[in-house]
Image (cartoon, rainbow, N blue to C red; front, top):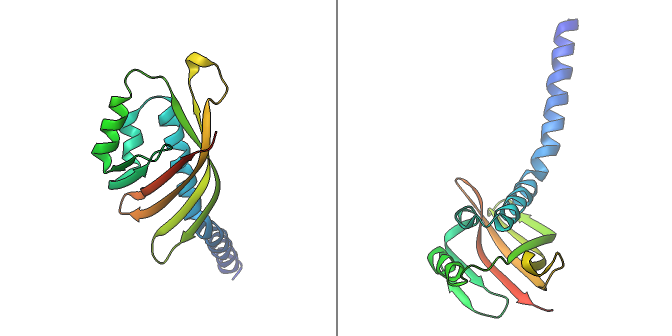
Length: 148
């Protein structure tokens, strides 16, 4: 009887604990992908950066250029040449629609050029729509607006 009660207590404790985690899992996953994306950007790992996007991603750059698809974004990055500039996104909000497998993220982005110092050289706001794919959360469209 004591063993059964202890097992029941352990099972219920695990269930209650994991239920709390599940309610935040999608948001935490998105934030983890965003963090990994920021690290890849800072490391100039373009292949890794692109892996966090859907193939049909739509990107509006800070100056208003619309890029359609992962290949167009890859070409845009390559056309940037040997620039050491990188962008870091600072998430301010993530809203998740678990039923539809969609999420909204917005925040502030900062561009850095290590050859010009450690201060941001340009920044603005961004928003991204995330979609839950079989291999995790991916960005479908993203919009950047240069404000400084």
